[in-house]
Image (cartoon, rainbow, N blue to C red; front, side, top):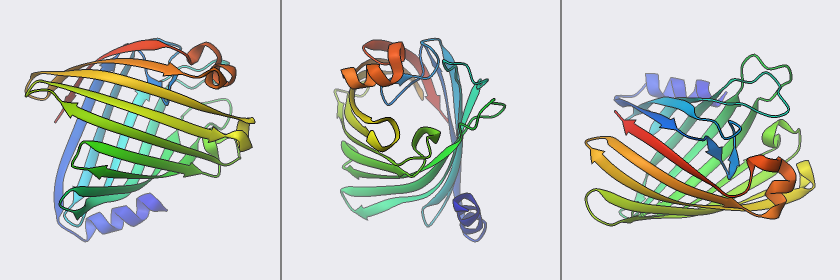
Length: 221
C-alpha cells in the first residue's frame, strides 16, 4: 500500500531525479549482526524522488543465514517522504518492506521508520514493526548517530542502537559502530567500520553478533 501511494504521488508531481548507489563490502552487518555469515556481499540501490519530497527506492544485497532457510538475497522496498522542517532540521519518514525471495520459510516483514537530522551532523532514528524480523511480534529499534567531517576527504561516523525485541525473542540488545570514511575520488569512497554488540545480541544471534571489522568500497551516482 505504501509503495502504491508514493507511486501515485510521484506520477502526479515533477520528478526531482534518479539516484543510486553501489557497495562491495567484506561483511554485510545490519544492526550489529552479520547477514552474510561474515562473508563479502555486493549491494546496490536506486531511488526515484519527486519535487514535494515523496520518494520510492529499492536496495538489494546478498545474504546468508544460519540455519539455512534458502535466502540468498535481500531486497528492501522503501516508500516515504523526506524534506526540511527548518533550516537546520530534516525529517525522513518511510515504510520499508524487507523481501527475501526463494526462501523455504516466510522471512519477509515490514517496518515503519523515521529519522530526524540536525545540520546533517546528528541524527536519531526510530523503527517500529508488529512483525519484527518476521517473528509475528512487535519490535522497536532506536539509533543515535553523529557525523564529523575532518576535511574535504575524511570524515568519522558513529552510532549506537538499541533493539527492543523482548516481545519477539524475550531479549533486547545494544550495539555500536564507528566508521572512518575516505573520499578517494569523486563519488568513490572507502569505509572502515568497527562493530560491537552486547552479550544479549550474542545470545540472540550467536557468532553473527559481537566484535567485527567491516571494509567497504562504495559509490553513489
